Amino acid sequence: MTSTWTEPSNTATALLLLGRGSDPASERGVDCPGDLPAPSDPDLVARATAAKAALGDRVFVLGHHYQRDEVIQFADVTGDSFKLAQQAAARPDAEFIVFCGVHFMAESADILTGKDQQVILPDLAAGCSMADMAVLGQVEAAWERFEDLGITGEIVPVTYMNSSADIKGFVGRNKGVVCTSSNAQRALTWSFEQGSKVFFLPDQHLGRNTAVLEMGFDLDDCVLYDPHKPGGGLTDDQLRNARMILWRGHCSVHGRFTLDSVREVRERVPGVNVLVHPECRHEVVRAADQVGSTEYIIKALDAAPAGSAWAVGTELNLVRRLALAHPDKQIMFLDRTVCYCSTMNRIDLPHLVWALEELVAGRVPNVITVDEDTAANARVALDQMLALP
Ligand code: SF4
Image (cartoon, rainbow, N blue to C red):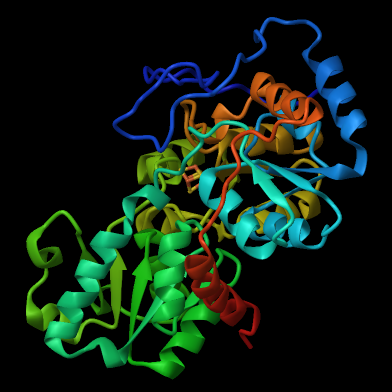
């Protein structure tokens, strides 16, 4: 059966697809130490296959759902960030965990794996713009403001999985919990049993969408703490009265979908089902037919009847893969233009080949390590998530 997939048009934004370019103002690391194979090398697939075979069970390759096809074909397991970290922890015999994803995911894998395992990120420039929007110093400054107001005793900090190890450590130190897009409601329910307010990091949209659409809060119960404004841009009374203090962070990929994208696709494709991720803006989620995590989106499309039409608001690599896997359904990207996660895209086949061949040569490149104290505190918040009722 022929696929109905249509590629969105290109944006004007240049993507640093091969990780050779640099944007030092916005990325964690931009250099790849060592010579990358040329992307035009016709032997890249054979080289990756040979290196992986030479390493055998010593290496375990994880591939996030948003990774490119050229990388995903070498993944031993695919999944969202938490599932991948759990899979890494379930493979204590693998010396090397090659994480085809972004920096915070590799940190989580390092936190959950054994001391003798090393987690490798094939391109150190693969950060996450959302995770980078909450820096520990900023978050501690906000907490001090809450302390000055005398409200920290009422506040439970909650951080989305998509945050740095530092932030997870902060949340663990302050008796909070980590959440994913699948369990955010359970995490908030638990948190409101511990205190009367939640400080939600770093994704304002997931926090707001969960509180308002799943837990019955009003939009007025939520305030937005902007770390770039004095005092977060909030008055003392706003902070005292708020139930949800949302950090001003967002995903640059999911944040691009607009109400116009939803209206446009409904006009163009009568009967279309709009399915979006909860990292999308509140008005987009409200206008959609269904909302759910990456794993939810995959299951919903697997279960959808043949002939049904779906406009999906999540990362393009995944939507394209799902469209090609379901040629009997009309699956399209919610936006008209390309919306890759540019940092996820930095992990390409040349970087994967380079990382695997370095391991074969006895050198361990791009190891991601979280210090003991941070890891111990982050584990408290992660364990609390695993213990959620
Ligand atoms: S899709 Fe968004 S949240 Fe996920 S890694 Fe990319 S920027 Fe971060």
